[in-house]
Image (cartoon, rainbow, N blue to C red; front, side, top):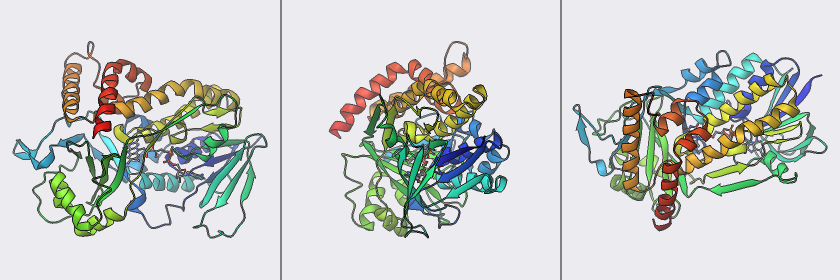
Length: 450
Ligand SMILES: Cc1cc2nc3c(=O)[nH]c(=O)nc-3n(C[C@H](O)[C@H](O)[C@H](O)COP(=O)(O)OP(=O)(O)OC[C@H]3O[C@@H](n4cnc5c(N)ncnc54)[C@H](O)[C@@H]3O)c2cc1C
């Protein structure tokens, strides 16, 4: 019998799941509903996007679908590590090149970096190339407002951008509904009415704002190796992260403790430029007045983390990706974990011969400890205190060296395990529990006083 699957959210996890299900055969008819406009047809909005890096876990989930990994790589750049520049432009000359690296910049496996929106566009393009509307229907500008688990119906409200914005709400039936609708999931809200469901939602005390530096043909003193992610931090734990883009521009974000209002207090383009020149001179040098103006207009965003005790309901509702376990972007794992979820669901459908009751119940069992561990790792792996951050750099360096020399006796470093392996997050947390506890305590003190 054909199962009518409604996927809410056309983000990376929702679109990849559609692929995996359609590939399983004719028994699945998929409808994806997305609150925003179709990213393939609207003008690219830099204000709404940010660069992400895909590591071992995410790429493994993509490469199981023929052609998808290659298509994603075609719009990505490979980075072989991160340069942590010293603040205030003080640099150390290394091999004749100006840079200061506090962490070993080399990774064994390159990171694949691209813009989140470009990832979604690529996945959608490949998906619609392969499957026609007889099995796959896409509905944009439709915001899920309610899921009724008892009657198996879901309601959507057309958004203002919808061509049919005067249309009334739409209520559809489903056999299965998948909440891939991100950190503020509407599908997850339906779980609140189910027995013994627990949800913990916490705001990370660090906010962020996007930065976009256009391609510059002007010579610059700043040494920005093109195959590295570049990062700067000041003593107030304000961090700038910049990634090269295919068109020669650089995009990234500035992260800042919410209690520190230096960034949100900026009110003129001149003040923005002054701020960057003072705190991140190398970034200030690359920022034209037009970007200072655009930066000012962009909103600051909060990051929320989510822990749930269950990701399924009966045999007909599942949440995954950020909807199930949103995490801090500090380790660059949210999307990787979301894509990994999809591959796990697919493995479980193999194991349970497409019996959804068994497969989705097992998804909760198999994923919960790792998802909770990832929230913990994201919150407390990287210290805010400059002193402890230096210690982190030294620990990483030492662990990498020891592991390279004596792999049988020394485990890889924390970042290597997170980014370059598929070791379950719960095992990584267990191995690095002492460090995580130390950072948690320090961050609480540091972020409270800063
Ligand atoms: C600054 C920043 C940097 C990051 N860097 C990285 C990184 O380097 N590596 C990494 O792995 N992760 C990174 N992440 C995290 C990553 O972006 C997310 O974890 C990932 O996008 C989650 O994918 P998803 O498909 O689960 O949800 P989302 O990407 O959030 O997609 C959910 C979709 O659902 C739609 N939606 C929401 N509500 C509704 C509704 N009611 N009805 C219909 N549709 C709805 C949304 O519009 C969206 O399109 C970063 C995040 C941030 C904020």
